[in-house]
Length: 406
Image 1: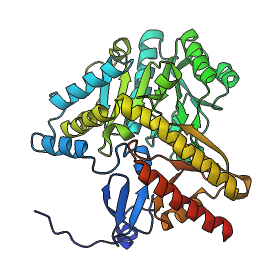
Image 2: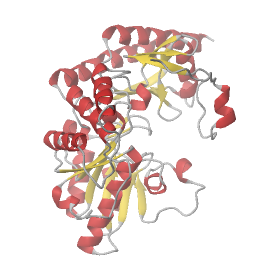
Image 3: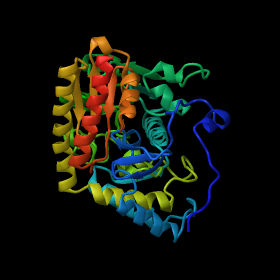
């Protein structure tokens, strides 16, 4: 039976919520596949994917079934005990990746927090307290906790919250010489996104990741890949490190791992994992049965040759059409990215106006994102069908036509 809810509207956000977000004027209320409907019944095509979260779109039957089945069994038991869904998902992640051990948490920030704490603990145990420095990339994004926001290379997110975590250096992305100049025997970890997400959908160069791996080995530092946004099939491989053939020591995952249900994971080797002994780290909800049951269904669904090949094929469909739109209207200077994480870089005439493009697209019935004010980002469902791709890009082109002719 359906529950009767009190009516709410967009104005309630301004009255009751902390104003750290500026949500759209309409309120989505229902989703199915790659389409959503707002309170007025207006239908929109979703190329935003909940910011690269809704990896199988909305209300995918496999995820609904997994969540419903688990909801009728057990929701929460705490980490005083283990549970079957967590054990199944951990085993499958280990079987599918370089990793031998998994730590579950609730978000990408928590996965990165665990990764950074592990890196510092390993270095402390092996080399002493002086080996604690972390090198990250300019314009990187690793979360919103005080530690992860300090590691992220965007001061606009970390300024104004008191003293920052010490021992963190930022170097330009894809600049191996800069990384080589910065790394030292005090470095405990280098953390990189194989594809910078919030920084503008910027893929790493092959030689850069290979060089970072070599430098870390030479300096007894750990290589951490933040795959919160680019992992779980988004690049057309299960994880982006597989695309490059460069294996990290620690990998963080979240977003798409739960397909919309909050879950994060840190993956690493058995040798490193033993440094997080009983009591050194934890989380109340991490590895809860609901999240892990959904995560297992996500992994089972996307980690197939057909789905991953489809991601690569759909990349070409998106990229070629976006390049044509960009050329026709003078909007984009470049279309870049891997798989279904795509960034359309605005031309000089449109620099800084990604939000304007986003709003115009929503008015035409298609949801897109921005990745910095200069890049329009597309992160649709990995199983978005051809009809929705074509219709969504038609709507996007109409929005661009209206914008550029205004």
